[in-house]
Image 1 (cartoon, one colour):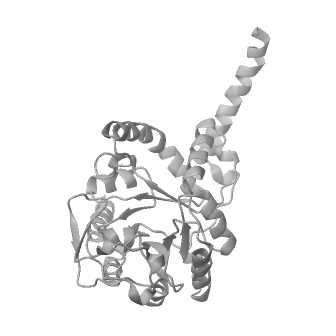
Image 2 (tube, helix red, strand yellow):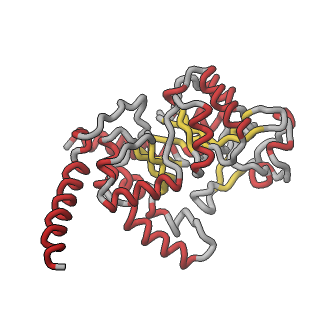
Image 3 (tube, helix red, strand yellow):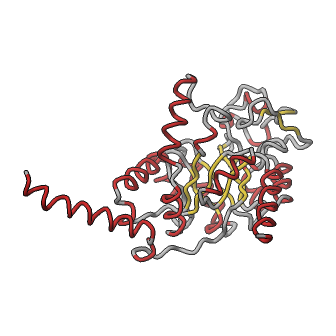
Length: 318
């Protein structure tokens, strides 16, 4: 046993030192791809805290605040139109208990006059524009605006239609595939492999495992974006579980595992841009950028623009 430790401990020590060395200097092993855009301000659901979510009015408002990225969710109508909608069922958005897929595009109902902001409980958004829009119309209105398109279900027709629209509007480099499920992401990448894509949930867990085992510096990374929740919002504006105790536990555990500046800096140096969602308070903006994140996804683009402008002004003064 003694002789085993005699050889194992120095080997382990050398491995740890090498891992830390390359964690801090990943470009010695990997050549990062230059990003096509840098999303400091990402508008969640098009900017759903200041106007009704996913409407042209919300997106125009976000553009006025110099948003760098619009985050969108997509569904497919009965007549095959890709529509920008977070929910499959329209009850919460419009009060009509129908699935998007059971209606033609022209039959889609208006949004309600006010919608609660999901990540700001008790706050409601209003707007004069209550129309649901197609992804094609969004691409036409904002042809060079970077967007993240999230697919929530394994609908191959939906995936292929999104891929074709991205190609048609020459948006391969500025449209991000996003999905929580690896099985869906696999289909998305197959439909249009030229689009950058983000980490899924399982790939995110794998990333953390590699980081804590010290293997991350030596492993290839295909993803270009890590779009993750910020642990500090759990039990304040984000409640992943119905049990308060579980939310408290999730907040503590995820904060310990995820909020590692060395991990975020490593990813950034390798060309993986880190975006924390969905942050609606200045204190959370500060935490995210303090960790070294590329950007923040928010429901309130005006508030984040104000923070970024003040932060930039303060940096110039110092």
